[in-house]
Length: 411
Image 1 (cartoon, rainbow, N blue to C red):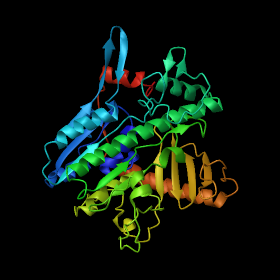
Image 2: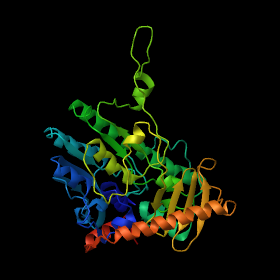
Image 3: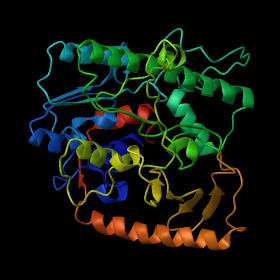
Image 4: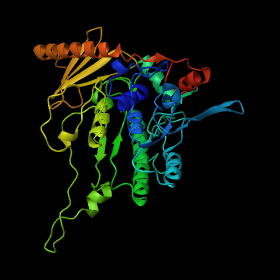
């Protein structure tokens, strides 16, 4: 979920340690955010964010000199008027205004796009033309976003609650709307990178594009982002280091040239790292490249060695959901989905079954028991660490609560 995932990105702590899980939680002052650590070293810091989950009341604004939080939802002529954050183009325009006055170096810029989430309109995923229908093909169904006056996110949440399933054509249609949102946001990220390049900031910058969570389309029975299967937790992490070329898809297809008889030099292609990593690795990785020491309590690891080609250390990967008690631990090709404290478990071989369709917990009893043992030891450790970093409770105003409820994020 957006709030705990972003808190983990900015603190390098697991959710069960930082404790920021729901709307009543806020980050304790005992934890330093990435922005705070960089600001202490003289970095100019600015964030441009959308959605109520990044409201300053949750304290993720700490360390940012500029925290441009946009949220506009109110009443108009007796009807609820939803504009839950700027779209990506509007967000970019605000960022470009900031970039028009070049930041003093060094700087840390955090840009948050919300467009790919299921939203407040009639359709659950709704990108502007031509992206909205870019992948819908010849869909002939009649799904209009909901029924009975309930639409979009609220309708998808209703489907989860009632255990209903979409017809396959409708399910594919909804997923294609989501793909359109990805294409739209991808285009706008490209616009941001081009502006950084135009302002001569891109070449010497570390750029990281990452997602807080994925989305599910009833691959495992539910929609939105409620579980810990791969469609939710296998998120992109794209990283450009200083002086590295930035490769768009167009670059890869048409502009990369290899050495020829005319003497053109070969350009280095981007590399893909197969070892699994975690969102909590982002902060120590950035700080490592900047030669800044990170706090001892950090639970992530720097990926600098991995990026340089060193063999990865054996590291287990952990995830959890917020709406239930579901966790996962991944070690190599094996992944255990585990409900705590119920003890229900599923075991998957991600090499042969990447979509997690065949539960091997009974066929691989010893393997399942070993991962369960490792999970329980980890769980005890992160809970104990959380005693020192327990979040503090926030009084959530009625408007914020109603805003999140109207979008289907809370009951």
